[in-house]
Length: 194
Image 1 (cartoon, helix red, strand yellow):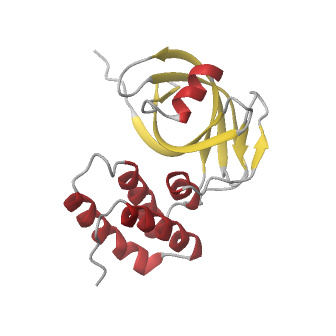
Image 2 (cartoon, helix red, strand yellow):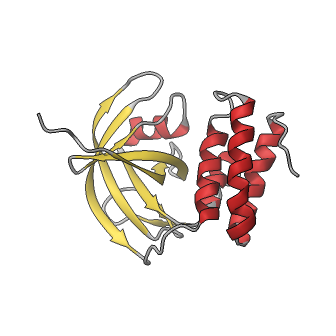
């Protein structure tokens, strides 16, 4: 039996809210047999939007502030109208994919949407993440799970990730990192800042 290959990509999913506004959220999505699999947690705005609208955009961006901002209340990013669907993509996207969600499984705690690619668009080349950008994305994943992980795990991971921030962060990465550290502080988790 052939094994299905599934790779998880850290992206920004932009869905359309009930009032027609763009809602962008960081998410790990999988690609299986030329379909995109999106599994938002329930309850969430992304889950509600996808269940109702069945269209969305996968944004590929190297501006890690978008990842951190979605988790820390900084969500006002410029968007542009899509070509193939009723929706929006991030102006900062290096590329984006417009999807129609063909299948839906309402599982707990995560639902499963399977999307067919309607169009793909490249706006600028992706030159790769530096270590600080990767550290911000990893820290954003930790922040999204503050309620699920032991404080010690978060402290250890942040201590390691902060090395990359100190060595390779630019202004955007420092701003995003600061937002995430404030969120961790608000959760009552004490970090060792030697």
